[in-house]
Length: 116
Image 1 (cartoon, rainbow, N blue to C red):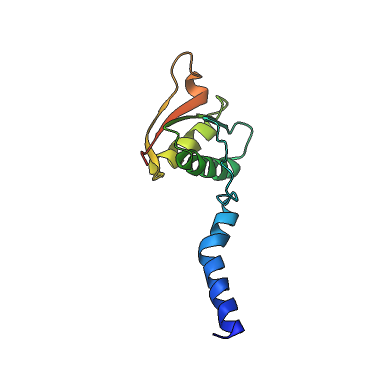
Image 2: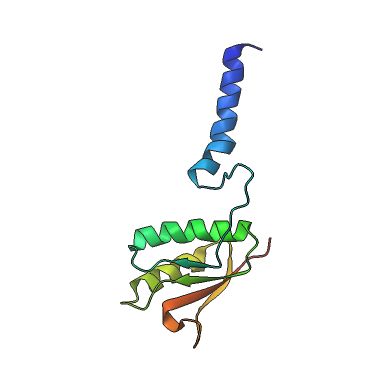
């Protein structure tokens, strides 16, 4: 096997398997990543919130969390609407609801994640 072919095969492996993990923050060099059971989205733009929510849901699922809290704040309701739209079509979400009294009410959404 020539050196160029080895480099090409290694490059293809890196691009297909390793690079996406670096890109999306999933590659942690063997360390267990601590994931909180809540994510703060208030004071973010809608685009920033969507990206942070997607990454958080993936991390929470991989960490084995079953229920998480998404804190979007009360405000004008824009973030709450964006969060609701994202959760309704996210493959890792079983169900979601607005938090009740004592849980954060309309400033927080409670999310039930899919089982592993």
